[in-house]
Image (cartoon, rainbow, N blue to C red):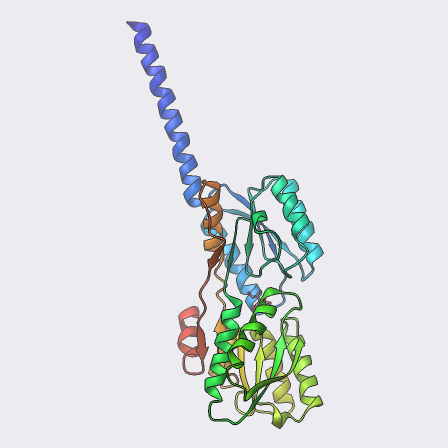
Amino acid sequence: MRSHKLFLSALLVLVLAFTSILFVAHAQDSSGAGLTIGFAQTGSESGWRTDFTNAMMSEAEAMGINLLFSDGQQKQENQIAALRSFIAQGVDAIILAPIVETGWDDVLQEAADAEIPVLIIDRGVTADPSLYITRVASDFVYEGRLAGAWLATATADRASCNVVELYGTVGSSPAIDRATGFADAIALFPQIQIIASQSGDFTRSGGKTVMESFLSSMDPSTICAVFAHNDDMLIGAIQAMEEAGITPAVDILTVSVDATNDELQMLIDGKANATVLLSPYMGGPAYQAIIDYLGGAELPPLIMVPSAMYFQDTAAAELANRTGG
Ligand code: GZL
């Protein structure tokens, strides 16, 4: 009789121990606590990129994730080295924000061989999709189409509109796709023509330098609008226009992408006309996708982050909403 009671007590202890292990495992699955994720960021080239980095860090902290951060400083070789370091450290997962589309196959294969899942965030890659678990991003083509459609409505009463384009980082999917989407939209309006396009590499200094060259190489009065692939290049272009005695958003219309706080202020000040939102808050969906994947879930190939637009009459409310002002 006594041995029977001992057996039942031991069995009860085993059942309780097993149940608590399952509970802790489930808790990790749902909260991410205890996960170590390596994040290979592109760089810190723009205000949006800084906002994105800050959001990734704060969202990881909120979910109890140990985030190992690497700033690629706008160099693909730095990002590849970071991925190899994460693999060597045996992280639970890797998030890559790739600077350009190509050149990732080998290192993604190394991560796959090490059985470390990789999630692509923001910009895209041309690598075999089986080498990463999903991508969290906005639709850059759609962003370009929104910008082009806005310009078409803003210039509907004009016989012609010559556009200068501040192109993003050459070879990056936002530059390729935003240019495609914008061209698609204005193709329906033959009076709108892109007369010049040059890369400002998504930086303010790059945008200023390129806009200065446009203004010095052609009659500024023939330029109807500037389409900038991001707000930082546009803010540089606004500086160039003002230094040349041109009134931005009046003499030359402006449309760009990101909707950073600094760009919203430009809209409020009447120095810009329109910007397409690119949300920096992609960390939450990315971390949850990794948690779900590690829990055995199937993921869609793309987890979309929506876009919107802001204008001079809506910028103040959005900025106040963001800053609690
Ligand atoms: C696009 C993102 C771009 C931003 C720029 O998703 O990669 O890179 O639009 C940033 O501000 O430099």
